[in-house]
Length: 239
Ligand SMILES: C[S@@+](CC[C@H](N)C(=O)[O-])C[C@H]1O[C@@H](n2cnc3c(N)ncnc32)[C@H](O)[C@@H]1O
Image 1 (tube, rainbow, N blue to C red):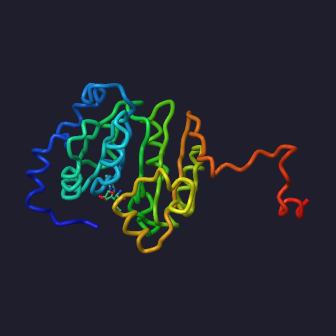
Image 2 (cartoon, rainbow, N blue to C red):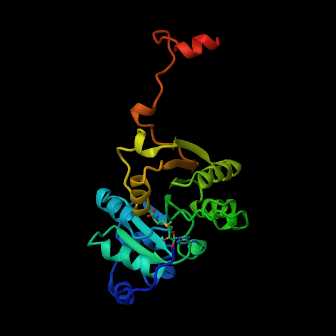
Image 3 (spheres, rainbow, N blue to C red):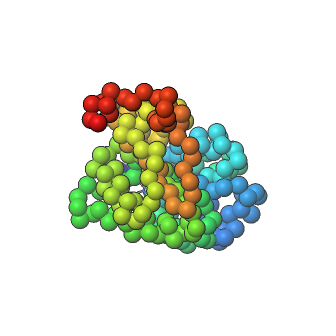
């Protein structure tokens, strides 16, 4: 949904120190910009910035960069950024990421409630379309990870296929995030608040290459099959 430009937006974007106006010039120099060599996580399509600013607050030893192509929306995100030193915002399109970052300069991408583009002829605009995955992979370099969540089952299933075709390792998958072991650590986005308050399930996954997944939350791990463990009845019946 495109918002009408608000009068204060230009002023906010011009004056807010979190909004990076010369982002192309920071390419290869993001560690200098943040003044440390902490990992950099980016959110593509950060919207009004709830998720990224809360993450920056919760994880001060990670640097967060929000990318958003809509002028008015990123203005709202800028207003929420407070004085967090580990948060930057860039108004640009995801297709231009390689003009902003050197290979290996960021370690994780968040894709939250990306536009679903329901018509088949528009699938190539989906941020998990294979060409996007190939371009993210090239920018990650040797290793990288993408955390993805959506309310849209069709987009989720499409994304599973795309990640899988490009040979990403998938883990931490849930078809109902808010009733899963991943809920405890979850930080909600604006869209997530809205959809979950309507009772809609939220789908999520993690996709990686060149790096092992974090351990699963203990409640998501099945007990190891050893001699002391009784075989579940369902399996006994099938044997
Ligand atoms: C459905 S909204 C979700 C916003 C936020 N992530 C949330 O969950 O509340 C999708 C956002 O992604 C942005 N977006 C879509 N395609 C983009 C692209 N190619 N580059 C940058 N931003 C994009 C849109 O402008 C919009 O603000």
